[in-house]
Amino acid sequence: MSGATLAAPARLPWLPLAIGVLVLLAWDSAVRFAHVPQVLLPSPGSVASSLWQAAPVLARHALATGGAACGAFLVAVAAGMVLAAVMMLSPLLNRLLYPNLLLFQLLPKVALGPLFVVWLGIGLPSLFAFAVFVSVFPVAVGTLAGLRAADPNQLRMCRAAGGNAWQAFWHVRLPTSMPYVFAGAKVAATMAFTGATVGEFISANAGLGYMVMQAQARSDTPLIFAALAVLCLLGAALYGAVGLAETAARRRWGTRR
Amino acid sequence: MPEAPTLVADAIRFDAVGKTFPTRPVPLRAVESVSFTVRRGEFVAILGPSGCGKSTLLMMAAGLEVPSEGRLERGGVELVGPHRQTGVMFQDATLLPWLSVLDNVLFPATIRRIPRAKVLDQAMRLIGTVGLKGFEGARPHELSGGMRQRAAICRALVLDPDLILMDEPFSALDAITRDEMGDVLLDLWQHTQKSAIFVTHSIREAVLLADRVLVMSRRPATVAEELVVPFPRPRAPALADSAEFGAVVAHLRGVIARNMA
Ligand SMILES: Nc1ncnc2c1ncn2[C@@H]1O[C@H](COP(=O)(O)OP(=O)(O)OP(=O)(O)O)[C@@H](O)[C@H]1O
Ligand SMILES: [Mg+2]
Image (cartoon, rainbow over all chains, first blue to last red; front, side, top):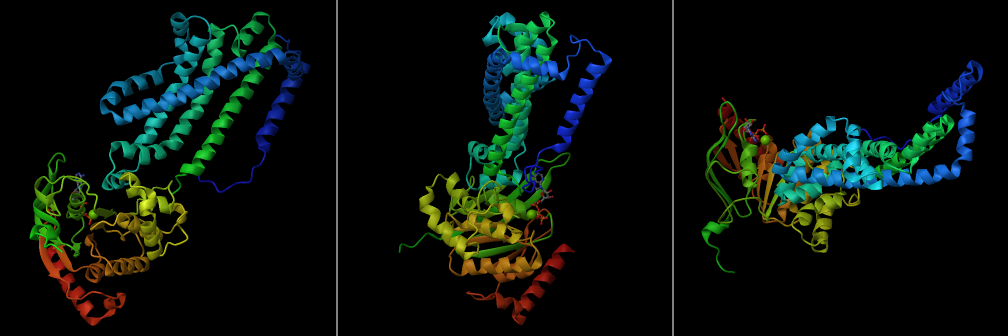
């Protein structure tokens, strides 16, 4: 397993931080000296002041988006794992579902957003369903790959001990799949925010996506950037939480050999 | 003690057992009409050329492969699947990397839904016997290859089976560790009445451990020769250094060479 790193001391990522600061400086000087209009590209300073002024509103909308995305993420992880388990345990369902799953995986799922509005109307249900829809596939496909990656020798050992298919699933396949589940969950975490935000573009009256649309209508570009910054923060927070859960799981099911 | 019927005195009986794998384009005949019996408490070693079908034979005994023809009896009853009283050891330890040594040893109990408390003493005793005391909580990746096979021995024995099937359990180990493991097995067998089938490429291991050695032909495997090992039990590891031991090993080497030709 590639995660088998020796406990590295926690260090601040200096290099990426330095590059971030450099980009900010370049951005600022570009706006300052090339006289780029605010509507096209606001300076970092005006984004910051917009962040500060709109903080209460941003917080309210962030709560809506974060809540929807995190909820959708949890539902997608649960549903994706169940879907994969069902396909693993039932060859018939696997044959019925798997090709469709792959097909959906290939589809630009975001394009289906308007359909959800047609079916479920404007509001939370359609945006939540849409966010679940776009994030369930990486979990299902990843988990299934993990369940199938189980070591044939370990499966044989389990069978020799008298284990049935269900026990092989529970005691061998599921622990094997953990790193794959987390790989899928990390993709799902970003997909859930994509889904929630796009959902808010087309079907909401709250949330950061909705706010971006409002700001755009008012040509308030600094506010758009401020909302994007909050969105980044939220996405990073969920991603980080998944990472922490993975560390905990690795301690429990660490698969180093 | 009531006298057991003669049939049941056999731990396992192969009766004209054959196995063909439905490979393409031509089916592969791995085992050809094998008949032999392992009596209660008897330790049988199987020697034979690589790829002749020894593992296939053992997997059928473990109930993991179904014979294409013939019949397998386990304690007088037809064998249809993995048997509760059979312990199996494979070429590699196949420990589950996410479980501790103790949990790996207890795995058969977990699968058979036997309460942990019931077998914990037996597990700890075995772990002590094979020299893994203090490593109960370790994960497999923290063990050496030999230690992993020791844990696998404990796992095979934890439910106190009356038959152990071992498929080249030490072949992945270095020569010194390998001899050491042979001694561990020898020691374990001094005190048990368990039957065993032990597939190996090491003539020394076969002669040291077994009451009887079966030499298989090339594929498809049949029992080509059979040799009763003339050394009484209990045996000490030092037996392997004796001249008589060397003579038996040399004889078997000749038999095998004749079979390979
Ligand atoms: N599941 C299977 N499907 C098809 N062919 C198989 C299968 N298992 C084994 N064989 C074939 O059967 C033959 C005997 O294999 P087996 O593993 O029993 O040999 P072996 O005597 O154990 O060899 P070795 O000493 O190298 O372990 C081989 O030619 C092998 O390719
Ligand atoms: Mg083999």
